[in-house]
Image 1: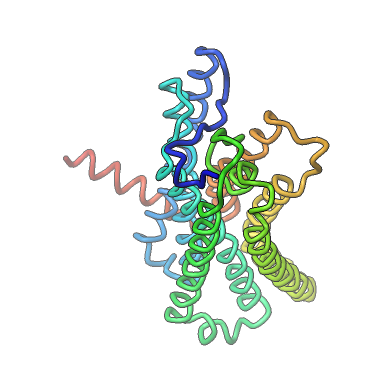
Image 2: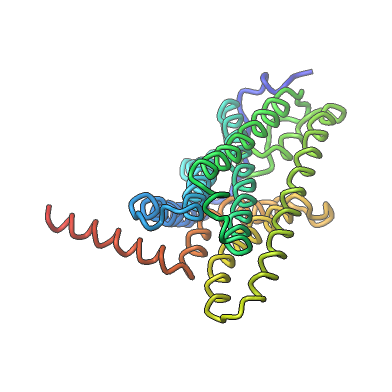
Length: 313
């Protein structure tokens, strides 16, 4: 009975069969990837260089941009390279690395979004305690906890997944290595251990979801009690982008993993996987910059600085 280490490579799902469509998909995804790099890179640069953005909210936003950059860079470049060179292969080591990084980054992002909900809760419901509850040390510890929890989650799932014996070949029904599709290649009675770990992860994720919901119930109650319409507008302008990012992240992920098996198909799985692994990293910078004047000003100053420096040189 062969195990996963006896498989030297896996075959990923191709975007298209014809050469013309493969090149078209390569060009399309290259545009999305460059847009994600530009958007998240601008947020990283603006937050790092603009001293007025050195606050807890923007510190967590900086971490979110880092996670988004890592997430889209884990899956899309390999898929684009395969489309460009007309191949489907990924090495066993490459597949293991992809699974590890994807679980690490996606888990860390979800935990970070939970922390960001807590940040908005304290800022609106307990503004007098904001400085003491979310000091620089506390923020660093919370961000480290999100990254560390994602790392432990990734180690656990990756080690367990690739220790399973494979009996169903090496064709992964996805454009990147993903745990559910690798489990489909395992022997019928060998995946129960990973299923137990998945149940634990889902329970933890549900706890984070409950925390986010409760936080926003308290936030909306506090906002609606504000006597000033200007104060309500300011509060909503800081909360709605985060809420939109959480909704995009959860809705696409839940549909990908909880959709009925009766409607599952390779083409639908491909579209859904793109929605939750590629779209959020590319769209999140737009969501956060649409209603955030401070971020817009910082990005404009950054552009002016780069432009003036280029002219001087």
